[in-house]
Length: 143
Image 1 (tube, one colour):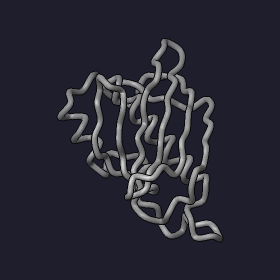
Image 2: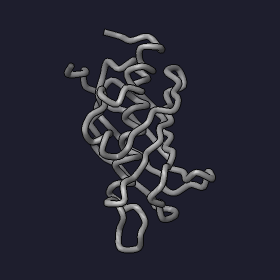
Image 3: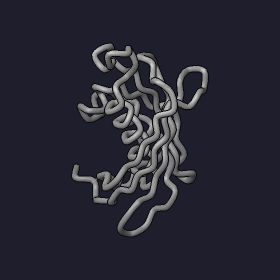
Image 4: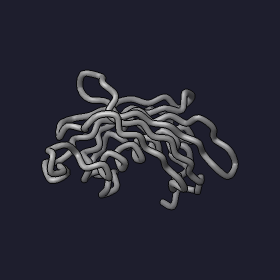
């Protein structure tokens, strides 16, 4: 079952429809383009995510980028699929503050058996904090 743009927006903005992992990360839908294959989301890291230096621990940064890229891929197919990640590479550019951050996920190529994606995480001033690329496998939405 495919969803129209308004239904997709409503579903992604409804906190009760988010998986527990997205809720934990403080996921907030900002905008997306089905045709463009991208999505922008905000995350609000919790103080418990901080490493000894006071920045967000890298595993949480990775999870944020993984979420942003997966949402972009799912949206590009009108939420009819999920995309379990097969491989992901991340580059940390700056410490991620324990503050609201913005991630943009993009689909680079959507094939029959794999999806290539990229993402960038930015702070409130627009400075890049981390970048990622990933390969995932498209699967029918289980719901």
